[in-house]
Image 1 (cartoon, rainbow, N blue to C red):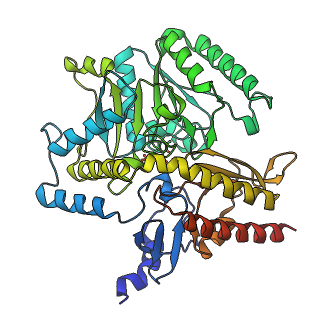
Image 2: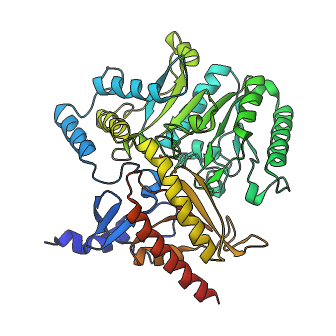
Image 3: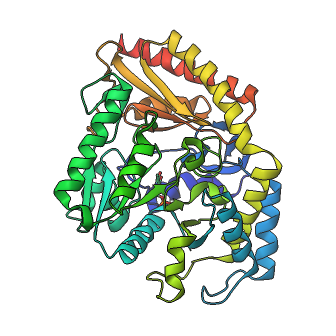
Length: 443
Ligand SMILES: Cc1ncc(COP(=O)(O)O)c(C=O)c1O
């Protein structure tokens, strides 16, 4: 039975909810009231396949029974414990995350409520640990929205924060499909990108830079997998100058690239890892900073320079413990590698059928599909960071039962790691239809 609230919730939503990043007028998204696995259902019973796991976040799919039970049980036991007290689930989750991290000497975890906060805290830790002030971040990056994390971001969602926090210096990272270094050769791209970075370090002062913060795979700025060797060279350069390397694994963490962390996928060990989203499969808001033991030990006799009311919130801790157990028991990191094969096959087929697709790229269960006006010149279908959007295309997908996260001319294909191949077939059929309609509309 539809309740009065459900009948009115579209209208109430439009009237009272401020939706992130969008102009508010004229929007009528479906009212999602239920989820199961890779499927979402609206208040009219219509079904949508979730091909982007929300915001690349619901790695386990919706309504996972183990997670639902763990959250309920924890709520009944104790729902809040002050961060200065200890808590069993907090200890268990921190230990489980450290066990997944790439540090032989172990590490420790500081919990936040989301990814942006984690990046801000990681920067504060790096500044405290090095006594240095500056931080390097890539232009094509997103690290969060609040003034600190927003300034760390390189792209245009940073602009409303400006002038922002001091000390953030940006660099260009490789992007073989749209090279900022004027080459189509991946090795040359890496060489030039590293030379550029080294020059920035020299001009900014080698002993003035606390950290370099980077997404090991660029997420919402186009799903860019760095060419082989780049991250290792960044590691080598940062180590040489005593700069701490922070991997922002908010999107890549917990199986997305086929391993617990992208650090494993690329065989590069950062000093700190920030995470969020997948740690609880986004059932409860949670983020955090994992710090390698040799650095974390500093805080044994120095106060930690951060704290939040919700740091280590028991509901989030219980969700995290259950999520990590599910990833392990259901072999979902391995499953992401299988999904990579399934996606490559389907994306290649789609690209052969549609001139509008300039490139598909990705790793694990994390792919981008870049739409272009011309394959030869690679002119994007709508300019990156311009005023146009492909919202009508993404709305058309939704109208045909497929939710896909998009930014400018890139669609992000990052399904729950529990998705079935038949569901992918259905999703790609809907994508195929929408691309046909888009092609016809442009003719
Ligand atoms: C790579 C990356 N870092 C940080 C964030 C910010 O995380 P949150 O929205 O939880 O603050 C995001 C959000 O999408 C992200 O993709």
